[in-house]
Length: 226
Image (cartoon, rainbow, N blue to C red; front, side, top):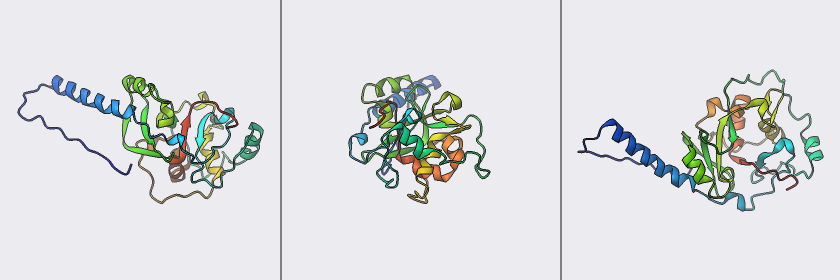
C-alpha cells in the first residue's frame, strides 16, 4: 500500500495484570478487524479489462487484463483447453521441488485463513507486509458486504488433489498464467508478502510468480463465458 499506519498506545501509571493487558489487546485487535473487514474499494466494478473465460478448471481465478495485453480472451471451455494445452512442461528439471505444507495464495475467507491483501480500486492487490490471521468475527463481518474474495486475497493450506486447480502434482493456476504471459515483468522489486517462503506459487516459480501475483483476483463464483 502507498500509505501505512502504525499505532502506539501507552497506558503508563495503570497497575494492570497480564489478563487485563491481554483483554485490552484483544479489544484493540477486534477494532482493527472490524475496520479491515468493511474495506471495499470497488476494484472489480471498474473497467480494467475483460477477464478470460472460465471453465471448470479455472473456477475461482480471474486474471485482470489491466497490464496483461498479451493475454488472449477466449469464449468457450474448448478454446480454453486448446489455449492452455501443452503450455507447461510440469516435469521440467529446472523447476524446484515443492515443499510440504505449502500455502495456497488464492483461498477463501474462512476462520484461520491469512489475510494477504486488499483489492484496490484499479483491480490489483495491495499486500500486507505482516501475516494476519482472520477469525470468525472478521469472517462474519466481511460476509455482510460484497463477496469477501472480491475485496481481499486470502491464503490457506494447499489441499493439493482436493482442489480443481491441482494437476501433475502442481498448482495449475500459476503455471498457466505464466505460460500465457512468458514475457510479463512489471518490476524488479517484489511486492510485500507475508507467506512467500511457504507460498505454493513461489515454490513453483520463484520471483516470476511474485511479480504477476498482484494481478490475480479470487472470485468463487462460476461464471463461464463472461
